Image (tube, rainbow, N blue to C red; front, side):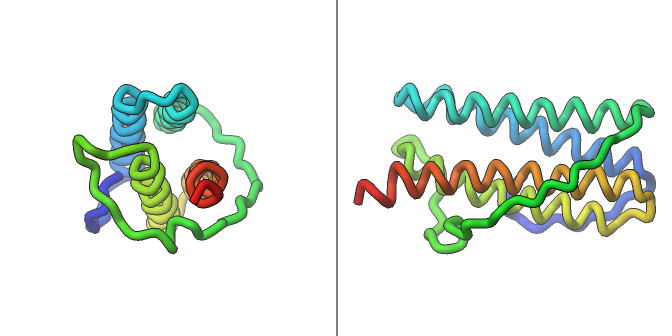
Length: 157
């Protein structure tokens, strides 16, 4: 889920779902690449878990597209707002764990906004609920990353 603004226009629910499935695949590849790049065992585990969660989101979207009923979640996630206080960084060959956390927090913030926007685009209550739930899942990822950043970066400095 890139930082650039995308114009969201779709002709059908299936187009929206296909778009979201592609976004989850890209998120999986993003976290997999960070896992492979970082050398700290703890960081590899974090990014591996995030990659697996993105694959679960992709599977859920595919199941809904294929007709499976979705069971919504009412869980609300606390926003620590650390991503809003740190400066943007770009991935580079010299990027470290701190950079990976910052880039990932901001990516999850963008994913939350994307799913919130997708929910607003449809009148289908089940699809709205699906996207709101996925927005909360992305908020959960952001919170996890923010907690790591707070514990492992801010407290060390």
